[in-house]
Image (cartoon, rainbow, N blue to C red; front, top):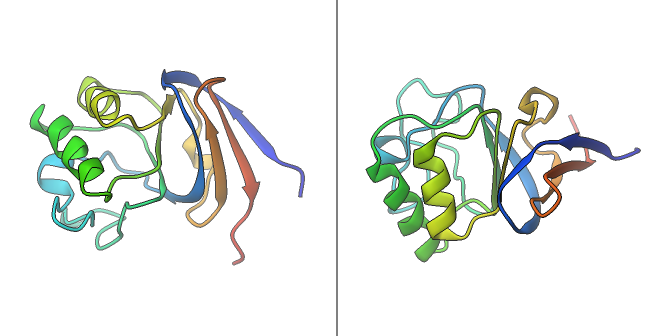
Length: 137
C-alpha cells in the first residue's frame, strides 16, 4: 500500500507512530475520560470503553470544561495519554492540554479518512499525518 498523506496544521510539535483510535464525536476529557485508566466513559460515545493510552487519538474537536486540559496533563503524567492527537478543528481546552502534556497535535485534518486500527504516523513538525498501514478488516 502506498502511504496516504493528510496535510494539516501543526499545533504542538513532535513525531509519533501508533495505532489510530478514531471517533466521529467530540471528546470531553473532564467527565468523558476516566483519569484513573484512560478509558472513554462518556455514555453513548462511539468510543465508550476504549482506552486512549498509546493511541493516535483522532476526533473532530474537544468540548467541555477547561479542567479537561489538566485531565489530559494528568493522563500524560500517569502514562495513560494518547501518543498524539489529530483533530478536524482544534479547540482551546485540547490545545492547552496537549501543550502542557507535550502531546504532538495536528488539526485541520480530514479524520474521516483514518480508520480505527490503522497504523499512523503524526509528524507535527511538518503538520502531516501518514496512514502507513490499513487495519486488517
